[in-house]
Length: 247
Image (cartoon, rainbow, N blue to C red; front, side, top):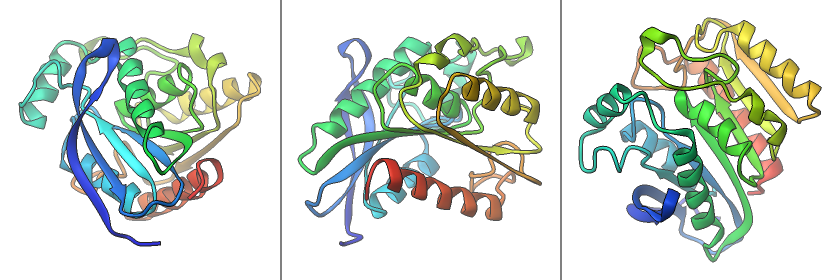
């Protein structure tokens, strides 16, 4: 096994056959391995998200992050693209599903692929990770503090993210949920309700909440970063993917 990798911006086929930008990283060996689709947070397709993609590659996975904002603001900076998309109320759920599905198909088509693909998302991407796992055939999903799964976004947020409660029976794979106990969106009460609902549906879900952590505790470039929570979270993610995707 080697930690050598290659990372680059590529084009993949997304929702509706659209060609969209994506960031792709892979180990430089030929052994069979799983793949991970990384869904970026609401601040956009940015440098910290690309670092997450590379982290998965260094740890033995093919990983890709589709730029969900590419159609709306091609070539714009992450901040500008995010501001534009937020002003539109966010990205439509069906388009997200199509883009994640295209990214998953890309990963499965790679020579070293063992056929297994997982998904992970942060913030809005956490909700979209669960949304994708309820709509696509995937092997593992990680939801990092995704809100508005059971409750609609507040009117003053400007976001048009509707609850996806009715999609939960379609969850196609085990789910790992990582949350901050001090978060408001999602609140601990919403997290507990979601966990209960999934259990009632007979779904495999492992939720963990961190005391002293709020929203975005994985974000190393923000004051919300909580190293102990993030390090433990990463350990759980790699154990989870090791079990369900292989290494």
